[in-house]
Image 1 (cartoon, one colour):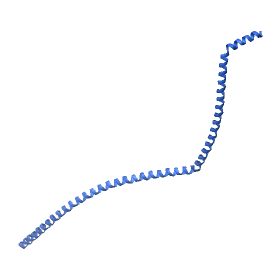
Image 2 (cartoon, rainbow, N blue to C red):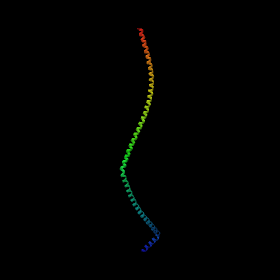
Image 3 (spheres, rainbow, N blue to C red):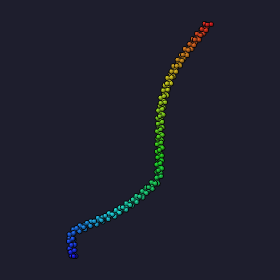
Image 4 (cartoon, rainbow, N blue to C red):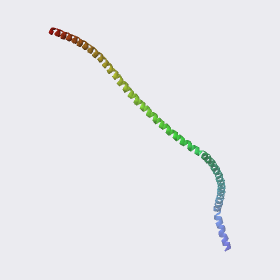
Length: 165
């Protein structure tokens, strides 16, 4: 039985020589790839540690920035509040200026209207003055005619009285 078993094993070995060589080749390649993977995993672990170290340094820098910001945060807020207040006052002043400019325009318009009315009144006053001069001349003529008529009437009355006497 042992001999037969040895014979079968010999036949199997003879039939599988090429396959066993291929197997050995694949096993060697797998071993090389496993070694490469192990090396890559070691490098990856190193890179991860380096990244953690960098992240820790970044966190320290961020903390420093935050500390510097918090140191000036109150002043920054105060300045923002003052700026907002200043802008509010500026807007209010601009609104008042616009109101003043609008009032000025209205006054200038009213002034023009008053000036125009004053010129019209001066023209009317000049016409009235010229009419008064004419009326004074007419009144003077009427007074003179009235005096002449009164003198003539007195003379007629005196003549009539003398004739009746």
